[in-house]
Length: 118
Image: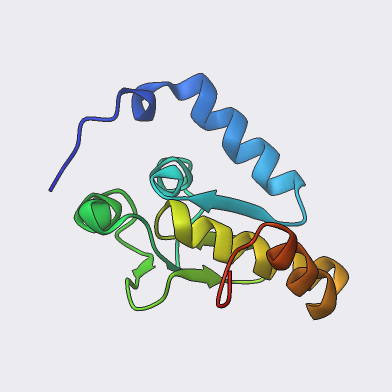
């Protein structure tokens, strides 16, 4: 399913994303944010994902990326893409673990009442 996402045509915004991403330690997208990263040319050769309804669109925009819906998120080291909104929580907790360790990630999830037992 191809969606018409007008912001993909905003070249100033797309260039801003590209520039900031190249300056960042890690760039992270959730849901359709991967489409913006694709338009900015940032996904070539990387394993990525997006919302399940837009996987085909992502493949069109980033034909040299490895679009893999088999995981809720993919972390390539400098770029993290998450499938949908709730997958964005998973990838955010993963990012907390990378920054501060597994204990901090577990504490954050507990505080949010997110995950098993909550």
